[in-house]
Length: 159
Image (cartoon, rainbow, N blue to C red):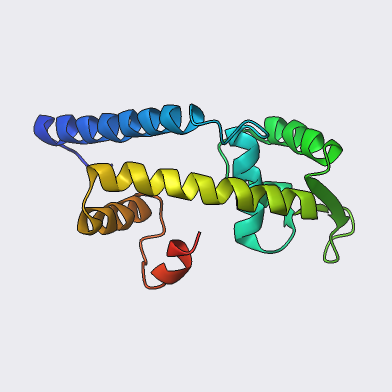
């Protein structure tokens, strides 16, 4: 394990705190806007993860895109299936597995909320950052998240 001096540890801790504070502020701002009245932010995360994938996913694959434990996600998916937002289908590769997909209703809701949410994100980011700083944020956050290769930004920009 690498050794870090006090200055490095303090800087890393302060950077982490700033990221988490920014996240909390933005989530609070977005939640107050009313776009998540029909679905919770967690439900929207599931809708968005499935939309982004473009194909039905196993529960474990959905879990990679959301911040929920497997049991909590399983219960959430059950509720969303009951509401007609998601569907379940068999997995052709593994007959014991189930895949989850968006229904037409779920896809429509995701598009509508997604447009409003993307506008809110742009408003908040560009109120605080220049376009160049936003590019830097994307690069740094992707690097921290393990997807540091930014060669195909066009797909990220079209959310």
